[in-house]
Image (cartoon, rainbow, N blue to C red; front, side):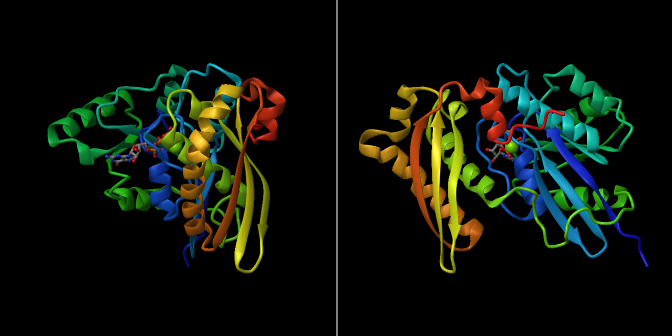
Length: 296
Ligand SMILES: Nc1nc2c(ncn2[C@@H]2O[C@H](COP(=O)(O)OP(=O)(O)OP(=O)(O)O)[C@@H](O)[C@H]2O)c(=O)[nH]1
Ligand SMILES: [Mg+2]
């Protein structure tokens, strides 16, 4: 009989390279939100892939940046924690990219004692020449890594990476029940669905000034009733979020509700309102309340 394998497989890399797309491709569910903007992911999100004799604990993490305010520092703490408990590191880069903005993180990868799989993503938008260049560059820069070329979006090369992960996983019993898909509560996915629509529909600083707090999540047999607050940092931002006669906010509500109905497989009633919460991004206590509290 084969021994059971389980372990933490943590995805790290620059913003916008496709970490969340890859995580969702592995899990087969839309656990992490995806947008074309950098800093879409703010948390460390666990996605669990279960088999009879394995359990892969994938972590999606925020893209690596130089933090400018407290929220971003907390985001980078999630990245740090992902380095600490990984059994396998997936270092995701995109075609044409050079290296991480943070040298300390980069050195952790090149000096890693655990297996590193370096995944060159988005090869669907390149050509053979670009790929050959990238392969050469990354072999030199991260000689300790095994390199794979993939397209997370088109699910190309993802199975090969997954098979290699299973080979490398340590022998271990499962960490979570075999029917569990994530460590995050339902409300987290509500918050994220709303935030995704805000990232998509609003410009500049607005999405980065927003946090969602789901105050009510009430499920009965046929419907889930949800009430969420969209928090902004300033009064002017509140007006922008709401839009002319509430039209902008309404669009966010409709689109988020559709996604959530798919995610939960149930009818959803979603009520949104907007509140000013001055400088929440720089307020340690507020950040803790919103789940950015992994400081040891
Ligand atoms: N062409 C192409 N686009 C991709 C691929 N993977 C991801 N993308 C796109 O790249 C953008 C960023 O994807 P995300 O998965 O949100 O990237 P991320 O690394 O999680 O970004 P952050 O959370 O902001 O750090 C989105 O527009 C994706 O659709 C790919 O394989 N090919
Ligand atoms: Mg992401």
